[in-house]
Image (cartoon, rainbow, N blue to C red; front, side, top):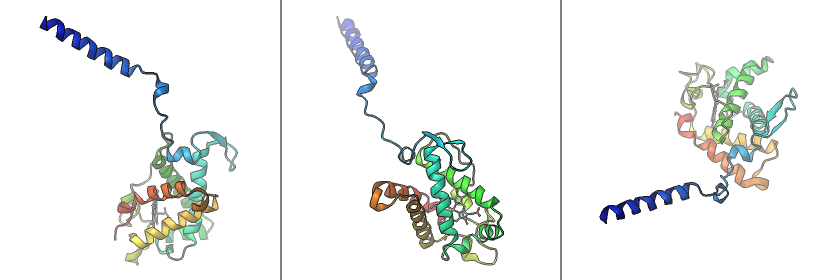
Length: 194
Ligand code: HEM
């Protein structure tokens, strides 16, 4: 009798597990969109530069990156960190700018939740220390070789300006601006090293 009871209990348990795991998928709540989805996601569109197909999310993030890099490059408060890049751009050499644009865009695609791109640049710690990235600051000026907290905030503010240049502002999409800024701030402990 006891054996039968145990067997019956086990059967009921197995059936419960099976029926729960076979529940119609439509009952599950839809997964919430990632930040990458919210900036365009993986819908393919024509790239205005070159005309090839590109994911809309990546196109948005690349546009924001490029706009922001121009704002940052023109920001006197931050220029001491970018002597190599500014020197190249001043001489109409955009090799470093293109590499930075690609790596920054890849970084944002991955960080916002795209599974289709890979970031192959330096870690955030290594990228922001002249000892491991000789494009950071200049050899004669110690304060340009590592970022401080106030300059980090200025940099993120400049990205806000880059976002606005692409039509996204706190006035028209406060949640998106706040979420993107919060994402950038997740790197602060690694980027700020003095
Ligand atoms: C807001 C968070 C930040 C992110 C997500 C970020 C991301 C990046 C990435 C992905 C790279 C390229 C690394 C590579 O190519 O291996 C980079 C390089 C660099 N970052 Fe940042 N960064 C941030 C903040 C800052 C700040 C606050 C400063 C200075 C104020 C700064 C200065 C630099 C410099 C000077 C480089 C090298 C640029 C070049 O290649 O010429 N970054 N950063």
